Amino acid sequence: MSEKSEKAKELFKSGYNCSQAVLGVFCEELGLDFETAMKISSSFGGGMGRMREVCGTVSGMFMAAGLMFGESDNSNPSAKGELYKRIQDLAEKFKEQNGSIICRELLQGIESSTSPMPSERTESYYKKRPCVDLVGDAVEIFEEYIAKQALPSKL
Image (cartoon, rainbow, N blue to C red; front, side, top):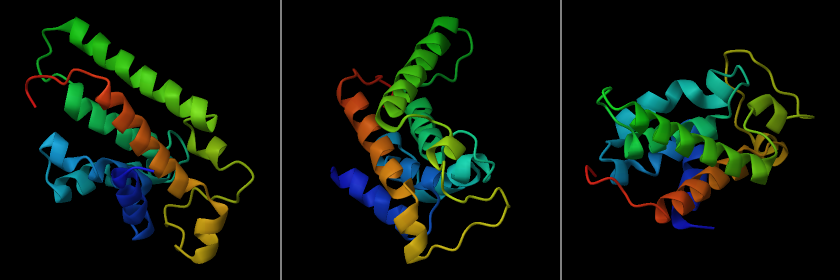
């Protein structure tokens, strides 16, 4: 377990959502202040606003990838394709490890509501949900991925 992975798990356990926990540990590398990262990723928890769609950990990982490898100049369509390939590779790795990137599928067999109100974070909550481990997995997958890449010169 990496240091960043452990920090992300602690962020999640302290009340940040899954997406915030993942993006938050990469702030330094991304040149992003923590408060802004928490705001940007705040609506992606619970599979996008608790709708149980794409897992928030995956969304946090994708946000980090976009900030690290994305382009702001729309005149280069191949750069967009390169980023999308990166996202697909990261999604595939997460699926290999966890079976899905969809929140409701990852929580299958666990009572999970789509109510907009977040669940109370109790000891029971953490025992029955895989979310803490998924946070750690997403961070480790992204760390492993960036370790194998030539980082863009703009960082």
